Image: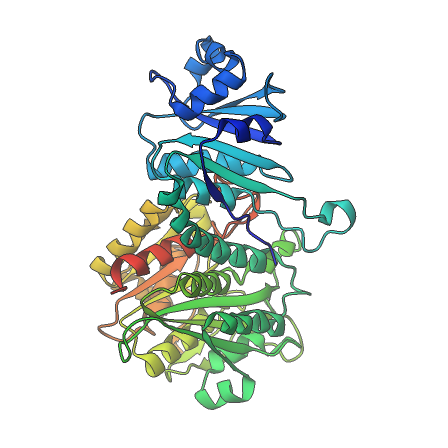
Amino acid sequence: MTDAITPVFAPLDIDTLAEAEGRVVVLVAEGSSLDKGARRVNRLMKGALERYLDGEAFGKQKAGQSTVLAYPSGMKAEAVEVVKVDKRLTPELARKVGAVVGAALSGQSVTVVAGSHKNLDQLALGAVLRAYAFKARKTGEAAEVKETSLTIQTGQPEQWTPTVEGVMAVAEGVFLTRDLVNEPSNILTTTEFAARAQALSDLGIEVEVLEEPELEKLGMRALLAVGQGSEAPSKVVVMQWKGGKSGDKPVALVGKGVVFDSGGISIKPGAGMEDMTMDMGGAGTVTGVMKTLAMRKAKANVVGLIGLVENMPDGKAQRPGDIVTTMKGDTVEIINTDAEGRMVLCDVLWYAQERFEPVAMVDLATLTGACVIALGHENAGVFSNDDDFCKSFLKAAETEEEGAWRLPLGAAYDKQLESAKADFKHVGGRPAGAITAAQYLQRFVKEGVPWIHLDIAGVADVKAPTAFAPKGATGWGVRALDRMIADNYEG
């Protein structure tokens, strides 16, 4: 739906710079002589760039900050944006600089004069990610997609041009996740979500949609109980990317896909309920990762499984006090129907292990408000039964600058899930709410299966712009999971 801007790497050329329209961005390191590209811009501006750099304002800026010099003499561009960088453009700073560029990309051409700086692929990625805008439900002028281009001039364009494909694979996966999370629930029904996942078959992903009769035969009564109060049919979508060796067991990614969460019979307060269109964020991330893996032809076997339901109050809806039987065979006492995500995940986690015997498994869910209280909107909560596996993810998240913080698991928390009527309850009360939710899910992880639970309630959809996204859906987790798979599971 949302088209990513494709960056173009080009050689340094003073004539092209003179005629470049829109905005020219030049990277300058404090205390260093101007590089070849910056010297060309300075020459075109008749020394105005150098005069600005000699002033007090540039000295006060921090790396990654910028100043706009409007209507530069000697150039066709409307503005020259001067971005301060360190002498060494690290991947992190390159993405930050790219985000500055991306914020200026709306409806205009931007030429970045990057000279001989390194990590320009990460600069391009930051720019493309930040330039995202969700316009699918707007009309008139606000819906128009304005012509935009991004050119990065460098001394060695041939070095960076091959990286464009990888940059775009990551961006397209993030954009798919953002589009899904941003969609309203009357558009993104369970059926529509499944259809968008099925469209990934064009990229070589094998996609199956399991409908309610099959889910009933499989014994997924916990998942089905969540959706039984809705007119929307519950579904499980299985997406297989087979890029690794034939016969190798896959990594499994499991996502919660509650397309709207009213809370069910335990109905939520009206204030803020409109935000519950994003409660399928875990499934959105899994779907985005699968697209990225396919676009870059990852040499790994990965299966993505998403449980798609709608949680609504109705005469058929499940009630607090009900006891349901999971696919695993455990009986669960329902305490609060608004704690529905773990009921969806427990059946899909068990199915993933029964069918695919994964080498490792990650689930993602906008699961608990308790995680938001604990970590805010800066970090996702990370829970794991395997230290090495967890470290591999945390390292990937740190590399990609996606906030993640590990929280504990422990048998002591199980006491909060004890039930007098069933094998256990699915809610343990307010204390340690994010932990007891993870503790519940761990009961559906087989012994010996490395597993991570990611509670993304605070990071999937935010009220203010982030470094790489406008306000709304962030696409959190696509980059980190793709990086983890690339670093640890590709041959």
